[in-house]
Image (tube, rainbow, N blue to C red; front, side):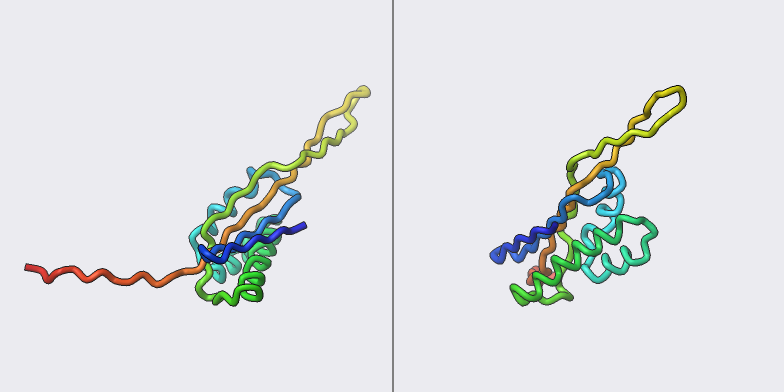
Length: 132
């Protein structure tokens, strides 16, 4: 289930993917590697990543890009990943049968994934005085 919020005044696109079947410990290194990159570069890096969860991250980025393009006519080439973070969700608890009638617990964690895109703006170059 995805929820997308777009704030037009700051040129920010926010995309949230809830109930991602992975722990936050496995998500954080992937998210840290894509922050600050342009969207095209981030999707390329995730495509060739060997991590299973990179597919869900790529899907969330693609969703945010599509909404930015269709709803607010942003230029895809100017979008970059401003922030990417994850949070804890529920933990499914299961058990595995062990020897002598015992049971061992298995925890299956879920996470929330939030990606914030922003549009690059051209900064005016400040003119300094001539060197003396």
